[in-house]
Length: 258
Image (cartoon, rainbow, N blue to C red; front, side):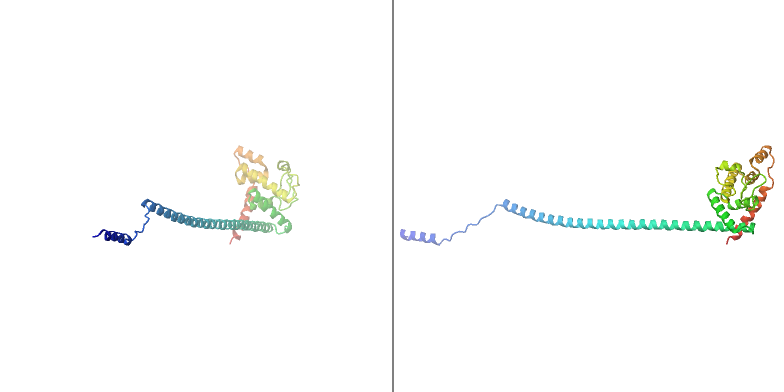
């Protein structure tokens, strides 16, 4: 080939060869860094969303707990109010029962006095019945026993005075006024009844025997103590008489039961 043709061919080849496009390639560690950033961003977003959801749930639970606590408090207040009402009702029932029971005792004693003495003034009988019921309840004494003593001692006469100087319904000796610290007169029915019940209780504790206590009530403790020392009987028929009336009155209670 001629040199001219050869140069021409070379020039033609140079112009016809296409240009090669340059491509940019990232290193592998760069791609990993980008993927890591994307993943961290996604995780952060997820955690934020989860935190917000948890906060919302916690807030809801807190509000519910407060509502439940308020409801429980109201419930407890309601129960306390019901308890107060229940106690008030029970107290009222106790008061009513006590009043009914007291009235029943007074009525029973009133009727018994009229049985023992039909001519007794009814106003006086009711006054005596009320006093006996009250004092016997306060001092733990049997109303039937007290009524039996009164019937035999004074025949329900508040102004009765014995030949020994005993005064009133329960025939109390005047020296007992000082012993018991009484300033009122023994002719007062309430005073005589209260004093008589106290004296009877004193002798009951002293002798621990009904007959001896009744005998001492009638004769005084001297003759009873003297008889006990001698080993003889102090009985004078008084205790047996009281016991007879007492039995009759207790029999009326039994007969009145349904």
